Image (cartoon, rainbow, N blue to C red; front, top):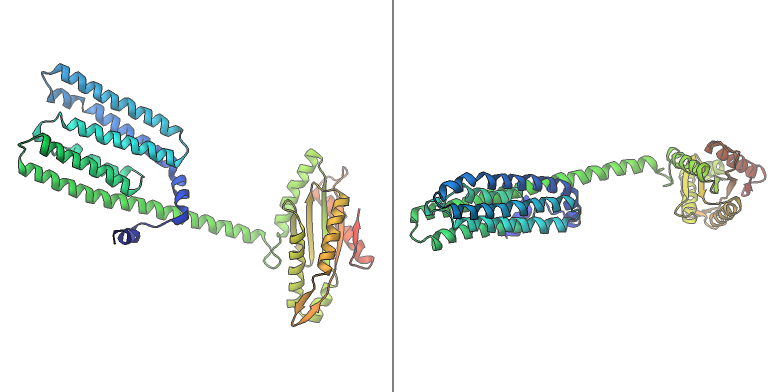
Length: 375
């Protein structure tokens, strides 16, 4: 029942839980550094209170100073280690250890307080701060906060025998109220962080989807002309720098207008889609395939010479011949004409190699179509 109520307020991120913690890790480290520094200043600021509580006992005052110095040094060491960590699990363990150390530190300090100081503001601040500032799981925060409160009441009720029952009852009630407010506040803060992260992921996914759709031709699932040329320009610059082999195929569906006129535009779209799918199946992972416009496509082949490019073209041509389209129960056989060109020392831009491949494709058409021409 408790878990059901908790789910109504806190979003369950499921598999994104790890990504959520990593996303906020740098912020968590920064905030941890801040509130550990505040705790250090708070401990140092209580030196004046120690002097008043143990006035006339210089030996006890020196022990208290040493005790506070240990807390300060440990806390500074924790800050240094936290600033260097880059893993969530390490961060959680370090922070949980420091919080446990801090709880124990203040509990032991309660033994030095007079019995009339049970309801000190410290007893209220510490559990509430754990709930609000700690990014750990709420169950861990509750364990630490309740441990401190139980220890505080125990010291006041057992160790400091004879305490006023009214004061003890007020302190116990105050602790329950602080825990209720702290737990609700912590739940609200963690829920807000989770909602913010989920909104960020959804917005990021939406932007990536828009970018994907802008770069992918919706009919053929190949790259758009603009995106193809962007990648091709980068590959050509790499060719100029390292002089690695680079080839390109320009493919054009034969008699495409006749297919449209005879069987309709639906059949034409199906032919284009199948040309694209066949080519995508034949290409390597490092190759780039895009639609230049209409029934014309291009396949960029990095690290590939002219002879290897011709082999790829022949493979695509054979695969397409063996893949007829079926429209209304009828088989539509079609072919492709392919022009092949390899980047050379005379090429000054990607347009140069592109024009040569395009010229070879038109020669293949003039020679009777369903052919491969290379330069």
